[in-house]
Image 1 (cartoon, helix red, strand yellow):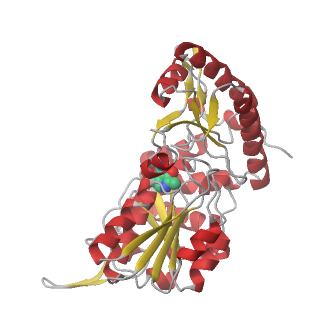
Image 2: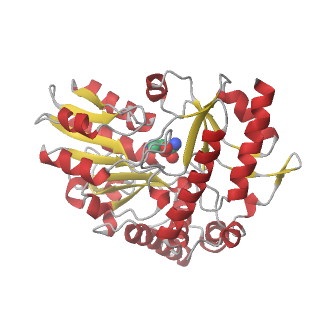
Length: 405
Ligand code: PMP
């Protein structure tokens, strides 16, 4: 079986529009994915049928809102094969999820301790650890990549010592598309007894994430890159680790007993979820994972690989186009430079032709510096993109090349 892409596209109302008289070609999926009708309907149903605060109402709407909200947690727990539902902590996104872990880590680190990350990091999985290390007087070590964008796994392993307390790496690089061997990296980090956080922002939308089989302690992702709403994300953590992790924000929902002078914390998941949560967002994300789970993961991957292969072939044939990121294991991300043209100019010309891509430093300035470039133009593919759209990208690029020559 292969994906019925036209039937899929029909479920995404936003895709059916023209930009300046040209059909929209949406190739900025690594920044955020579009939302299927199932997710839009779930959000609409929440606000039109049962909007109320969760966990505290003595009335029907609150009960129904709580039921949908907690059902969404069950859906996400099943989707990533969490060991228990309370291991799923709602956050505002990957960034907040990593901040929760880094903030707690800063309280656990001592001078001389080490944190290991990689050259591939998004700022969210780098600046967080920099700050934690600075607060604690610990050292941040960065594992190198090869020029292809593939992680140098041997060099990574060589950085791990008995002082390593936390190891963090992306499942998939947003800038280059590299897929890391996360099970192998986790196994190496576990040999020195470190905690492991996988930044799953880009890994989650390709299907088949099983947090238990990875063996990591934390896996973070955002709803909006998984066909869900913005403002909602997940920190998954092993129960025994989360139970002992310093609390993040304090306030309502997360407490057990409070006096005017002190407070004790509640149980998971609430102890890490202070305040009124993003109820609609969680429900929307629950709908998104249920929707995405109905697709066959092998079909999803095969389709993305087909798009990537077609795009790579055309890129290699286009004079002056330099692909940044050629690791053997990649998702559907094509980062590139077009001759000497500034990526922003390329993006602008493509936009006039209805083609939406990302341009800039990809929130990975150190990585761009490593390649000696200001940034890239980046086309990123999702399940609803077609081979015709790859062709449209390249005819727009040829026009851009002529205009910028
Ligand atoms: N890590 C990676 C690899 C990402 O691609 C992103 C989003 N671009 C983030 C972290 C941060 O995600 P968010 O902005 O949704 O918190």
